[in-house]
Each structure stands twice: as C-alpha cells, then as structure tokens.
Length: 186
Image (cartoon, rainbow, N blue to C red; front, side, top):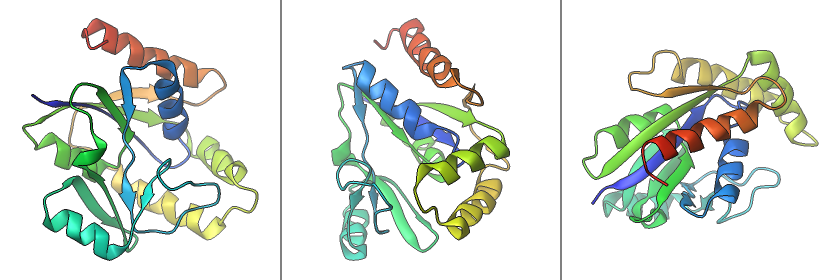
C-alpha cells in the first residue's frame, strides 16, 4: 500500500496554512501531517499543532533510524516529516517545501499530488506583516529571498492555485476537493 499525500507548497504568505486548515476542518478523510522542527516556536505556534518542536539530537536520531519521510536543513534549523505522522488509510495533507516534495517524489510508497499556491509579492508581504503583532521584518525579508531561490525552477509536476484576492481561498479549497472527487479519492 502507498501513503496518499497531498503536498501544499508556496512562498511565505501565499496562504498554504489557511488552505490546509480549511481542508482538514471540512472533511474527515483528511489527516493533517504535523512536521518536526528544531527551530523555536514562532508567536502563536503550538507544539503538536503547528509542528513538533524537538531537539537537534532527537531529530538526528529519527533521521538515523530511517523514521523520516523527508528531512531538510533550512536556515540552520532542521525540518522534516516522520512516518509516524502519516496514516495509511487516510489522505495525508501537509505544507511542504520544494526539497521535501522532491524527496517524496522519489519514494515508491508515496502517492503524491502537489498544489502550488501563488500570490503576488505585494499580497504576500502584507499578509506576513499582518500575521503577527510585532513581525520580525528581518525574518520576512530573509524568507522572501530564500523563497525566490527555492521556487525558481521547480522540477516536478504540480497543480497551480491562485490566492490573490478575497474569496480565492475558497476557490483553492474547492479545486482540491473537486480533484479528489474526480480521482475517486473521497
């Protein structure tokens, strides 16, 4: 059997997490993948909800024990998805980066569908500034430049979604649901 995984990718502020939450709240067939990271929580993030915040040692042990579906180092922090966060009989859905998608594409036990959420730089910047009461401007700029590199030349198939204006989130969610219905996944 294969793990059915829907990967949502996109640059910071594109709306990936909002789409993920709407999907997981709308359908019992979805299982939200919660990834692991060694970075500290950001304002408002909760352990076990947004990420499992673990030590570098714990992360390394999981990688060495082949317990990780995918893993990457980004800005000196480790990020990854452990196999124990997946369910074989559900549609697993999560937010990933392009490196994670490339890794999953190479696995024989994964049936992967990728959705790339796009929004203009101006829209994304506004969302990032409004997301927290005291946004870390340096972090927003760093993420902007990193995203520019990470999303420059994607070498895998994906379905493009646009989240630019009010109402687009619902269109994105409907598109994913309609695609699952057409492929008889739900």
